[in-house]
Image (cartoon, rainbow, N blue to C red; front, side, top):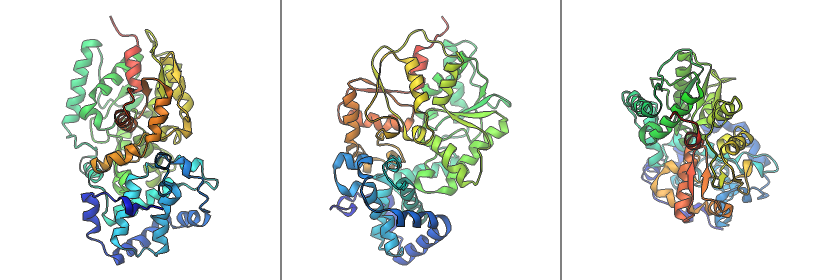
Length: 437
């Protein structure tokens, strides 16, 4: 059987990191990590896994390559189990291999947990491998640059403090030409909700802010955005294994909402950000409950539709299909509400097979797309099964309420020449809703 050693890719961040390691240092950090953060759970998984291989068909990398070294159990055997077998004392080159597996050959989509008869969470195990690599200073260069941006600016795109309100003002002025009286409210205390987005929106997807403002204006809701850091709900530090920066970013996000005394946070159409805010960073911070309630846009749009606040001039007539993002479907169970929103907007919905919690990953999630050009072809070719799934629908439009999914799906569509296009829910609502004459 092939192993990760047969397909190593050079990455400057990984190579520079392992150059500073010794077997003794690796062992020391490994033992501290196991003793302090994850020993009991990891030992349970290690002693429970019977290596049955039933997780194999869950992984899109295996389904695309049919190479056993890509199965979830093989990824764990080549990383965490290997470290345990050596009591953490391994050659630095082994850490390079562990890092490549953990950061670039697993999207942390957690599809495999649905196929394990013993409920082993391989995504969690791989996250701990990433945590070890982070503590050893061995992370891919591109995603580490993004984590540095979180650390320095509390947003992932190096957006400066004055660029953020300037961008919102620009979008407000543009939108007022179409919707007189529209505002993008900043720092309004006591609004019903704070709307948060990911940093790529003010950087190069400003139309999504424009569209959200138009939808909220038409729906007549009470909302605001924060003027201060904490407006970016994305979190690549979660995927590098830097739990300390991850928690700092999410604390700022929640504190922005608390300062504004809003009733809840509504998050834009991003899956990984929702995972960080709703499911991961809050646990790391030790909070029993979220200090401010949080909903994803899928759920919020569903509420607006139920309340009759969104009125359409017509439905989207061409056939569409729906991509289920892992973090809001497996992570939050929004599959039914997503479909109710899509059927409200579209006349002809063609389901992918498989779908819902069994849907295949987009090839971008888990921070894999953020590992950049060295690994781009690996993640796209490693998800050729997704291309087959998309092609089988026979449609030209794919709805995906997640930024990472758009990036990954667009790469797959281009690579395999599928003649398809992706849309956010906000794209469709804005396109189809009633607007002033």
